[in-house]
Length: 245
Image (cartoon, rainbow, N blue to C red; front, side, top):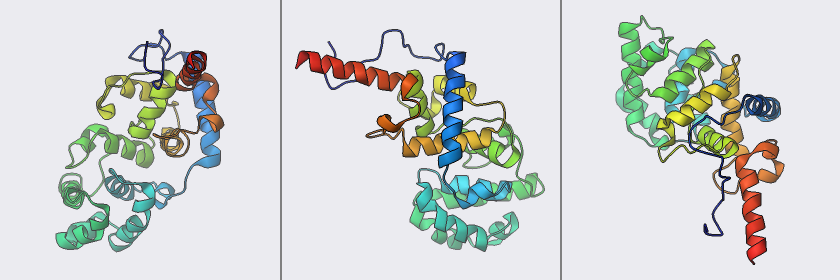
């Protein structure tokens, strides 16, 4: 028998996304969209479709909370409003401005990406995921986020918040490295709506930060609790504990 303090998942939930039922996905979408309309956070990079500004934001947001990034982001885009301005800035100056965020390499990679864009793309941030992935420091998450938020493309994203929601609600085992899990990436793409994927992605990020948190998730006030595998398994676990105590 599993330890009493572990969550017991029902036996019909297996790794992978074959249990992503279409009706459950539609229910999930309706609930998350409704929550997002009422609760999505407001940050300056969410008020623009400028590809450069969004690319800058995504670099700054790597492994850093949005609240920490917000004031530095605003100062950054005020000081370097265009790619040319950033390219012309001294590397030490850029690094100093971003120093409070940590990840010392982000300033270097951002400037390198800007130089590539100026040289190879006539100063226009590339519009495709494949082209964006060729930029220094740009991975799948950043590339798809720029595609969705700057260009309105139907590109779902996956980070720790999104992975946690998908794992808990659908009962998917994403393995240890969530950002590289084929099952979770497939799930993220399948549950995303066909339109307005940019706002959908942001709603997922905010829901993971506010409700479906890593520790002490707010299951009692969660709009997904009726069909959430994690919530149902937690209730089963509680019943087992009560019966054995």
